[in-house]
Image (spheres, rainbow, N blue to C red):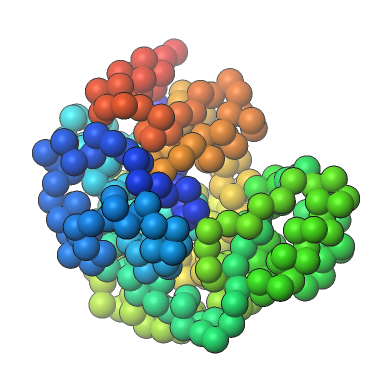
Length: 306
């Protein structure tokens, strides 16, 4: 089957995401592993804005639910994808889905990653700002205190910075015609503010077993494809404090000529972005389906197309 997988990142998690997940027996082992880290009340917790934005909880629930959904797809007989990519923290689930390390390792690493990131900006109020409808270079020129955290295309990006600078930038950029929104993320991800997180996160990776993945991965840190474990490890560390090259990741995946694209996670932001760039290759998010069978039916209709 000619399909690629995208794993969602932080900010779109919600209490009703993937509503069929607990009814899929094959997802249960992964959900239990996730709940050992973040608690069994995760759906109720997602209804609380403060808990939903907590870095450790958010990264844990995003990684765990994505891998539980992937386990359900595998149990249904879905074959390996052409390639995989994860957006920000979604890269942990992507690496595990491709076989670079286990799902259990990915969930443990989500906690380590969140802790390292929180400690990097301890005592500071930082976050992220989404900006669309304005060239990234112009937005940065107007708001030099911000850094580009995620490159989404010619007129769409996510910026990192201190809360006061982000709030001022939102008003200034809106006045210039851009569409802006603060994201529910409490750290200045993928920016120089995260540099103190690199060494402890890299050291923590020594405790985990790595394998060659079954398919290539589009890497946030470079925008290119990777498959060699050491290169994957280096990229996973680097992306914490460098711009996510998502536009280049999409291009690298498109070059694999998939018949369709499936986003695994909450919301459908990545699927919408893909459809805007590559309308001839349909993309859907699992969060748009009421049950697992609907996902499988869509994949079989589209991934096997000539």
